Length: 193
Ligand SMILES: [Fe+2]
Ligand SMILES: [Fe+2]
Image 1 (cartoon, rainbow, N blue to C red):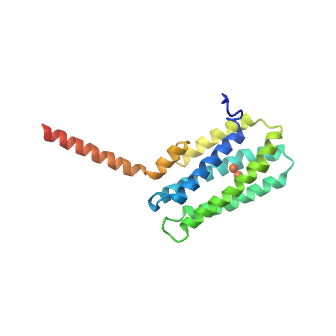
Image 2: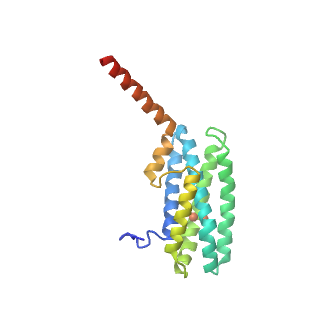
Image 3: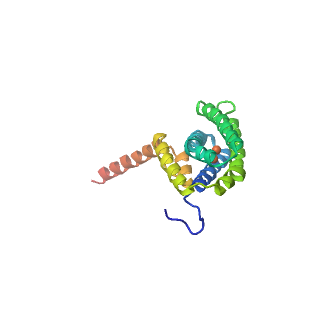
């Protein structure tokens, strides 16, 4: 696996999970500033990203950490926090923008995730780094499962720019816009003949 010069662990499990954390944090910040017309798509993307992230942690990362660390409590707490986050995610996924407390639920989810992520960064990840774990191999497993889940949930692109673009412009609308353009172009070509 190629490694970047700036980040010695760019492809390992911890780096992958940290990138996920950073990407979703940006989406939460974006949500708070977004007009109502963008909020539904942003919330949906946030929920899907978090579902995928929680799944790869629960299926692959946490069991490996549990096997390598002596701190069972830390992992128990992380899993309980995932449980509560998932309840909130399910609630948001069943709501529509404009319903009472839609925004509040998303904002509270963001605060909740923020707290959970801090614990992973400050407690779990440093312990995992010191543990006898093959984090590169674990990173490959996480990446493969993540890709699979992304295609299952119809989530594309990893970059933040792509995330924001697709959240802001639903595909159907842009297709309609380009169709309109095609029709116009055809009409003007016909008029020129
Ligand atoms: Fe987690
Ligand atoms: Fe995480």
